[in-house]
Amino acid sequence: MQGGGSYIRVDLEEVKPQDQSVTSEEKERKLLPHERKKIRTTIEHQFKAVISITPPTSDSLAEFDRLLADDQLKQLERLMTELELKNTPNRILEPKSFLHNARLQPLLVQMLEDIAQYRAYLERFIIRFGAENECTAPKQNPQSKSDTTKPSAPIHYAVLQLNGDFLDWLLARDNTDVNLRNSFKQTALTLLCENYDQCMRKSMQACPPGWLAEIRTLIKQLLEKGADFNICSIHMKLPFELLLKHCGHDETRSFVEQCVDKAQCALAICSINERNERVVGFYNNNPNVCVTVELLEIFLRYNDCSNFAKYLAHFEVNEANVKKVIRLLLHTACDQKVIRVFEVSFRSRRETHLQGNPAQTYTGCNYSSKDPNAPDTSSVDLNREYSRFESTEVQKGSELEHRVELKGLLKKVCLMADLPLLQRLLAKISDLIVLNDDPLLVNTLSKAYDFKRRIEERNALLACAEYLATQETIHMSKKDNSGNTSLHLALKYGFESVALALLRQRHTYLGMCNNDNLTPLDYGTYGFWRKYLDQCIEIDLKRSIPDRDEIRFNLNGFYSSLQDKAFQDVANPYR
Image 1 (cartoon, one colour):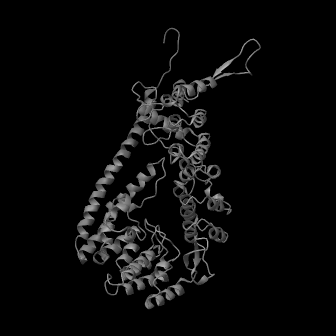
Image 2 (image 1 turned 90 degrees about the vertical axis):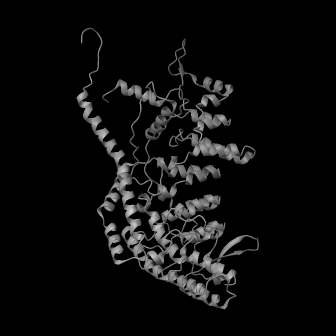
Image 3 (image 1 turned 45 degrees about the vertical axis):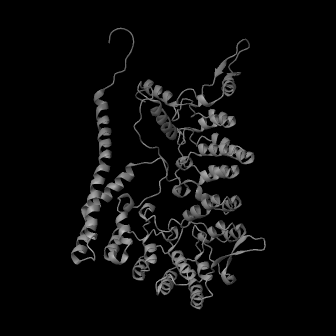
């Protein structure tokens, strides 16, 4: 090259293979869902054709066995596994079974709804997919049924159809959870006790002959396999109490005594004390109390804090039950707004279960980013890129082993407006996905605005919001359904102290647009921005000399970190 100046030579041959490999990988990734859908549809039609033959014949069962062992089914399982490995979600998703992901649950539900007719197919299907505890999606259950009789897993269908033979078969399998709960937290034992109660309340006239005897037989079957009476449903019903209130009936009284003998531990019952408070006691004051997570949950749901604290002292949290402890105790304590109980749970010397597993670290998701300085970059693209940039550039935290169980807990604590508890939890949780699965700041600010006439509650919520705004691990770009970030809402609602805290964060950007294409600048008042901009002008005393002051401008928020990053990439192309 003649004359002055310099240039950068880019060897296109070196870049091309890398681009081609990325393209081929993306193409393969896009083909996987189509291939999966094609195989899934074929398998579904084949299964439906076979189970339409009722009663089953030797030929239909042979064809059913062939389908269960078919290579196409194995290929579908492989594809589902590959998709799970390639998809790195930045949200916490409840783990789904293969039957759910492969859209094969409707087949299972069809067979479960008439166990007697499909049993030969059903047992083979359950064995092949390990579906003893398969909880069917709520949408697969008929909406016309009462909430109290809505089944979920095979064991629930079995007891509601009073199919003792199939129940025996299920209970004989090692993987069957006899205390599995449906979406209304009802166990198979609870469902049977509720049906028994309904029959007795109707003076046994509405029940078919022999139903009560069959229900009693099934209850005994469950108790022999370890079914627990001390589990309450979402309707606050204790199964043993449902039987106990019909002890005026001689046969029921005798049956209750048999249940007490089979239970081998104290059975929880509810009573009203002299202060007109609901408390949990035990039948016949039996001192042989087995402290389980479900029993502690009963104390919480009945707001019996004294019994909770008393029996928690005898309870050991371990790796086998920690998931239940989080779901049934910590979440329930927040739902019931029993802050004192939550504190007792923390003092039980088991806080380490909330800390990260150092053997696993969260690595940011891979994505194809767009140049933020490109002329065709829209505000929507810029917002999306900025959100991604923030989620990957913030210091990465360790991945929690129980992140699925912790999902939603921080949101509940924020909406409880308990600042000390929030501070304690944030100090224990380092997993960035757990911390940012919900838009905590957006939710807290919205609720504070809703409580604008309830000054005390609003101030408590704003205290939580101000604390969240100072935490670098909380992403500021999280939005509500209208595209508003926490800075949009803080300025829109006039929460200036929160807005100032947000503006000090290094990832805050004033160019973020909501769905109305408005930025935070559009929501702040003239007085606020004048005051804020005055604070952005500082005199650097360390660099100033006697006859000259050095003025520094704090431009945080006025330029996107993405643009700064893009400039660095251009300046250092081989970095």
